[in-house]
Image (cartoon, rainbow, N blue to C red; front, side, top):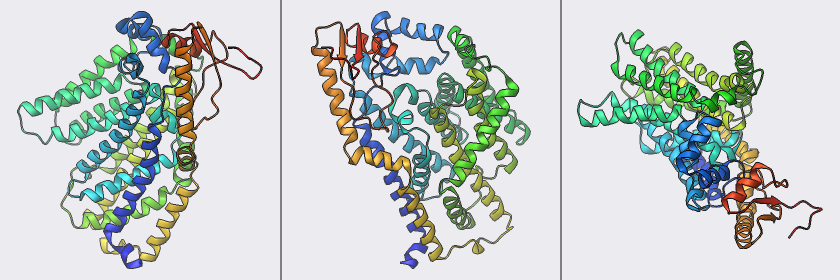
Amino acid sequence: MFKTLQKPIFQDLFNVGLLVVGLLPLLVLSLYNHPSPIDDYCYIDTVFKFGYFEAMNAYYTGWTGRYFGILLNHSNPLVVKWASGFKLLSFLLILWQTYVLYLLAKEVFPKWSKLSLWGLVGGLTFLYVLRMSSIAEAFYWMAAFVTYTVPNILTLTWIVVMIRWYQLPQGTLKTLTSVLASFLVFAVIGSSETNLTIIILLVVGWWGYQLIINRRWDWFAVILIGVCVFSCYLFFSSPGNQLRMSGNPEGRNIPFSAIESIKKLIKLGIDWVFRTPLLVFSSLWIVFLSKTFGNQPSNRLLSVPLWVVLIAYFGILFVQIFPSYYGIGIEPAPRVVNSIYFFFLLGWFYMLAVVVYHVVQKNWLSAKKWYFPPSIKAVLASLILVSALFSPNLRMIYGDWLKGRAAAYDTELKHRYAFIEQSSADTVYVEPLHSKPLSLYLDDANPNPAHLWSRCIGGYFGKKAVVLKTSHESKP
């Protein structure tokens, strides 16, 4: 058994197994997903009342400058009365994120086998699911995943597109690729303040890297900066964005925002490093890379100066936290923390890869000395499996699936929809949900007929309001 553990293919297969462990329940749970009373119905209620374009204009002028997020949210499946479309969207979103991680890994490590690449994706996905702040907000609540998960994926797609652009010969394909890269910048900036700061840092940072390190004036990077300027103008000139940012007295306080952001980042970093098997994965990753880099030619994506990587890494993490404190004066919501953790993991393993690459290429330490005996690998693999058994997130998603909580939730909501549609009353009173799987559920309808959720759900079904019964009520 120990000899088998020493074979490189075992580590890849083990990580692919972790990919299945993390991915399978997420995909299954997507089959039970439903629109949330929080915002999902309100976007479409506005469309039904004012029309498609006027509804988007109302949000842009009255609430937020997230022009691309507004477009996607007002195009959710409810616009064609297809509540089941939320199941398909979540299913495809999870697969999309996984595949983009694979594409990025393939660009960074082009000589690796497909099994090794999927193994890397498996380790990242497992760690992400293990400690993410809110699974529901990452994959199942559309108003949230449109604002964070989708632009995260688009940002990684942009990185892949940029890497490929510089490898293409002049011609139509390169021109189309530049158009795609520009659109991705435009879309990411228009999704959320968090991703706006990430993509601007990456675009401006790349231009600066080309100018200072490579001593090259990169016109393509300049064009992308122009796209950033135009996109930011659309974002920040929104009257709704100004109203939103003025809602908290601590907002727009730079010293307060910077200090609180650093404190929050330190707190999150300690949690992610010491309360997950990250250090176990890191030790295995370092040993694996040392042998891989010792047998492969130079890699331009890893020969970046370490100080550049460190600045970019901590910069990307910091700028994701800062907008929450600067814009509205509060700590980042769970959906924002999801995004921070996502880039924390990607940056962590990339940073380690750069360190190991430099060490091996400069012969500071012989790759032959980077070795774990089979018994140590067995212990480390056991620690990873134990972390899975005690992970609240994994216990939750498997429990919601295998104990039938998600299926019961799905059935209850289908019965509720049928009851609302069959009712002739303007105000429909519905029973509270008995099954509330935490991986899918965020909120129910509201007992107050004047509450926004009640009015939005009611408007979608052609009613005045859909109201949640309370224990002392016996409304028809």
